[in-house]
View (cartoon, rainbow over the protein chains, first blue to last red):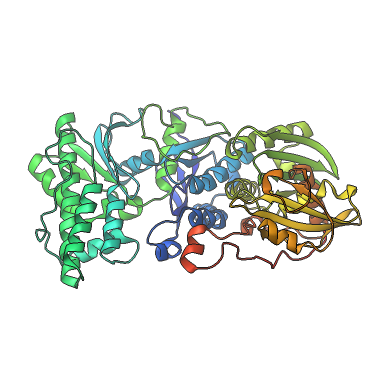
Length: 342
Length: 232
C-alpha cells in the first residue's frame, strides 16, 4: 500500500463543519471544528435546514484555517476525502460538494467516506498499538452499533445496531423531558452525578433477548412515564431519574459489547462516537474488561465527537486500498458500513 | 474575460463557459440530481471551450431564489473552485436570469415567476433597458398569486414556471439558463460587482420553517423589501 501523502478531510454530516489535513493517514498537521450548538439550542435539537445554511457560511473559513494550521496550500494536497453519509443529506452535500469540487480543481483523487468508518479508525489513531482484529462499539447521537474489524485493508462487518433510537438521541430526548439545557447528553450526565442510579429500576432494553441489536425507544418511554408520575420535578428528582436512566442506558451497551467480544472470541474493544466521552460508560466498560479480561480503548474527547481527522484518516485508507470515487458521487442519509459501503 | 457560469437553482443543471462575451462551452443535465450532475457538466463545458479551470478568471452563479439544496451545491462548489484565490464571483439573481432570455421581446414590464411551493411564487419585475434589465414593478419576493396580481400596476410579460400558479396573466414557459447567468455575471463583474466566494450566501428569501414557527415570524424575512435595485 502506497502512503497517500497529504489528505484533506471534510466532515459535515450533522451540525459540525470540520476540516483536517493528515500526512500519510496518521500525522495530524491541522484540524478545525466549527460547531453550531448556539444555533440549535433554542430548538432542543438539530434543525436540518439551519445546519445546512450554517455549513455553507462556514465551509471556506474552516478549510482555510485547517490548511493554514498545517502550513499547506491547496495545491500541495495529494487527495481530498469527504463524508458521503450517513447523516443529514443537506448538511452532507455542503462538505461533499466542496470536497469534490476542490479535488476536481486540483486534479487529485477524491474519496467519499462512511462516517462510521471514520469513527472506527479514530480508535486506531488514538492508540497506535490497536490494530485489527478488534470489536468496535459506535455510540453517538445518530448511531449505536457493533462492528467486527478484521484487518486494516478489509471493511468492518456489522454485528448489530439499534432498532430505533440511537443512544445519544435517547440521552438528548431524556434531557429534554427533564428540562435540561441543549445539548442534552453532557447536561444529563452532569445531573446524574448527584443522583442515585438505583432510585428507579428502569427496564433493561431487550433483556433476555439474544443477538447484538440495541433498542432505546422503550427506555425513553419508561422515563417519560416516570417523569409524568412524579409531577413537578425538584433537583433531587432530576438527579435520580437522570442517574437511573444513565445506568440503564449504559448497562445495555455493556451487556451487548461483552456478548460481542465473547461470541467473536476477541479481547479488544474500541469505543467511539460522542457518547464514548460518557464517564459512567467508561467506568462500567473498564470494570467489565477487568472482570472478563478484555482491553478497552477510548479515543480522546476531540476524536470522539465529530471531526475531520477521522475522515481524512479513513479516506487515506480507502486511497491506499486503491479506491477512487467519481465526481458524480452523491450523499446518502442512511446505510450500514459494510462490504458494499463506500 | 474567461467566465464559468453555473445554474443550479432549478431542477436542471446548466453550465456555461463564456469567453469575451461568447459562449464557448455549454453542458446541461436535466436528468440527474445536482450533486451528481454538476462536476461532470463543468468538465464537459470546460473541455468544449478547450480551457482548464485554472484559466477561468471569474465565476457567475445563480444565487437564488430557488431550490435550497441546489443553490448550496452550486455555491459550495464555487467556494472550492475559488478557495484561496481572489477570483471574483458574480451572484446573479435567479429571477433576473429568467427574465433575461425574454428581455428583447418586451418593451414593457417583464415578470419572472418560479414555483415556491405552498401555493406561492418567487417573483420579480424587470424592465428592459440599454440591452440589460432594471428592477421595476413587483420587487423580488415571495408572493401568493393574489398578492402578485395586486402588486402589478401595469400589463406585464410573465415568464417562468407554468406550474407556479396563475398571477392572472399568461405565463410563457421558461427556466433560468447558465447562458443568462453568464451574460448578466459578465456585466456585473465588468461593473465591479464581483464578490469573494467565501463570503457568499444564497438568496433564500425564506427562513427555515422551524425558525419561523419558533419565533412566530413569517417565513419570508425580506417580504416586500426586495433586492437593491441595481441595473443588470
